[in-house]
Image 1 (cartoon, rainbow, N blue to C red):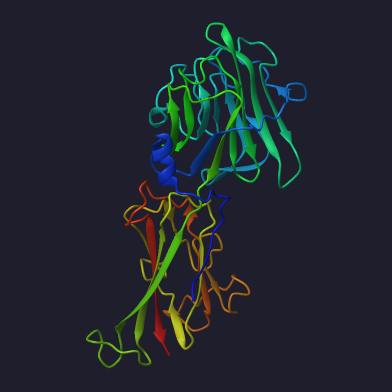
Image 2 (image 1 turned 30 degrees about the horizontal axis):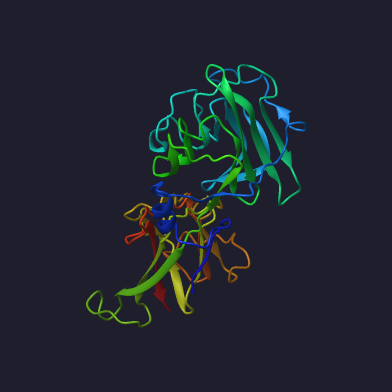
Length: 372
């Protein structure tokens, strides 16, 4: 038996490839898919109740880190703060004040949202950019509103907002903009291999409309195989499943989706077959397992510290998985007391690129047992 647990957010129920074709957006590996623009739109008015970004954003400026009010998962990683840029973008990592918009694939920094990247100029006027956390867990919202922000130097008034839903979805709301995106970039970018460009210098930000971004669910496929490598009678020549035989197990996990898996949520729990004892004396250097990243790479690592470590990639149980604090017998190559093992790779498991076809991002863990 093999148990895999992972965590993801809601997803849309239609074909991502079809969306790419219908609205002609640029597709790469993607954590999110977009729906819209829809009407009626979902504007949340914080013009009176919202907190002013302070100091007030000036031309080509970025705020300090602002608390979101809850933990928001963006592209598989958890964040509690973000920064707001005057030029119509939000940052979860490094920031930028570049005012000349480019395609999403060539933005100057990663981990950002681009609801309306253009050369905007709040001009240091208080109240032109506001934010507020609304609602109660688990349905809170973090709202950022750009209210009548002119295009540089002082042209017109652009009013739009971003809503981060605690559930993981993201809304771009457009009330009124100068040219409906004709000089703006709209999309998101988690990394240079995980982004979607909704539009670039195209009039797609229609007034009184909403773009909804939803996480794409991963699709994990697991395969467990076993092979006898030797036995006491035949050694490695046509070995049989007899007492004393050594069997090698391989667990391979593929992600057959563009959706990434949240950090730290791929957990593989495996009960050892009865009448077997696990090799704990070192299969790869001192580790009792071998972790092999695939092609395409998984984005995960599985580091080993020691048999006694509770913070590395592998845990052991001697009571059928009730607890995971058992330390195998270090003086023996095989430990019959181990009943279950658990692998906890670290990192964010990658999604596949579009169109989703094999080979998918994958990894394999190998370990050995001896038949009693």
